Length: 512
Ligand code: AMP
Image 1 (spheres, rainbow, N blue to C red):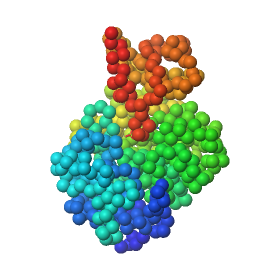
Image 2 (image 1 turned 45 degrees about the vertical axis):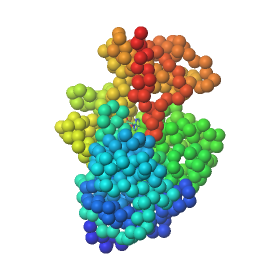
Image 3 (image 1 turned 45 degrees about the horizontal axis):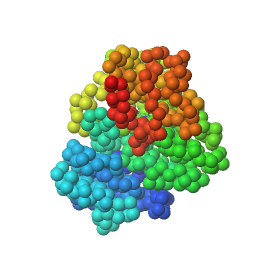
Image 4 (image 1 turned 135 degrees about the vertical axis):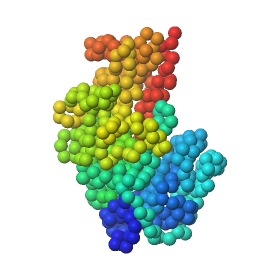
């Protein structure tokens, strides 16, 4: 790449460009056979950056994008970096009503949607005051794609510095309004550099990429790391165990949510032989059951590397690449990232072994919530630590354990019950596949501990037996008042159990 010729530098894109391998090397191999090589990354993102400028985009403008996964969507993200615009990806599951909120809140200059949703979303975007509405499809189609073909392959990057915004990602927001996490060029750059070193990524890596690209995991953790390392990504539209098994002999790494691993474990062709070309399996975005970790190791000889992060902070804590990857833990703070466990109310640090609030500080931590200065202030301590909302502890070896979101804590008769402790006991029972413990309004106790359990089809386990098994394992106040059996737990696309959905479903359970 002719880096010496760059007059201005768009901080993060410049770091990518400086490390780019030969133009002919593949960056994305799409499932349909299309290949975007590193030369296309440079010229394609330049074309799209020119298109954005022609649509009136100036540095600082938001570009909202609700499109299906495609290599061009990644080029659009890079084009935003180069033009100094703020990339704002939106979950493809959002309805027009939800899109109306995001467009109204973020006031983007441009809204890009799928060709199939344009009719439905045009009036929504217009009502939100967005004048430029473009489409981008999955098969090299859409108005943006057409404009791109006609645009110049060179672009003079905007001048962006470390603190300029690169992206806004709205958090899933299960309570209250969804908040836009503002991530700077520096936040994303520092995390990619840290992860490359911590997980040993290089230009030899080939990553199986079956995650969505509107979320931090598939977009920043996967894409930024592989782009900065000069590796290759094998793009699948979604979790597809057959396709993943087919790709494994060519791949070296995979990043997935726990569901990837539980689904792959059901296959008889998951063997040490089938995974021998792989050097690393990474899991995150939701808790990986210790059982899944152990089964994966038994079947493949690979210890999954579990890590912990969130939209607001990128990646924070990770099991080691070299060293013990301990099942049921998320590992130790990444280099340059500080973590601590505090008393949730007082904010004072707690000793090892005690459960409290996980707090994070470092160059990876976001700049605040878009247009919500009070919410932002409320979630930072005076010394700059971000209050994650996750409860956990640090053990004597320095490994962190996440026990769940603070808002999922159950308070029954004035006692705190950490759902994970009860879930672990239930999950260990023969015949149980998994469980979720929630608090449900209860006249006597405030909240009643309630277990929602998925069992093996063949198992005859019933409520009485579960409760009897827990009797000598857990203090009375932690024992569920009711155990409900279901076929599946509700999960979002990132594999997170939607406890808010369970709480809604069972809200009347203890009402007379
Ligand atoms: P998101 O912002 O969608 O990435 O969600 C971040 C949240 O996912 C965190 O605050 C945690 O509650 C959860 N999470 C991410 N990674 C893990 C993990 N390895 N174990 C448990 N929870 C996790």
